[in-house]
Amino acid sequence: MSRCPRQDHEGAWQHAMNRGIDRQPAFRSDADSQIFYDCLVVAMPRCGVEVHAYCLLDNHFHLLA
Image (cartoon, rainbow, N blue to C red; front, side, top):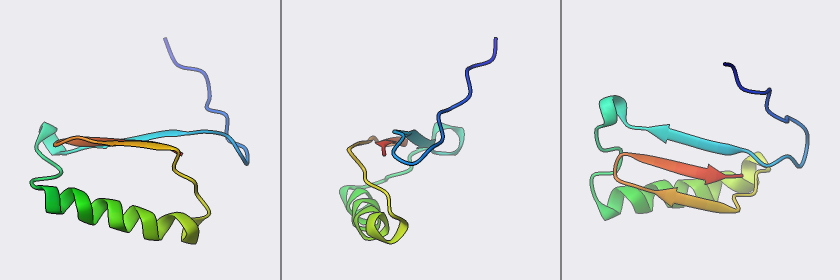
């Protein structure tokens, strides 16, 4: 069964996630996680996106934007 189309309009909340290839680690150290976080902070105003919540795990991440 397919899922319903996503709401795609200005102001809609989106769940974004990405996983490492073959469930391998995407973040190998705390420094990797910090680099990702720093890039996210810089990218948010440039792209006009607000991240309301995030979760960084060893092999994937989730963003509520």
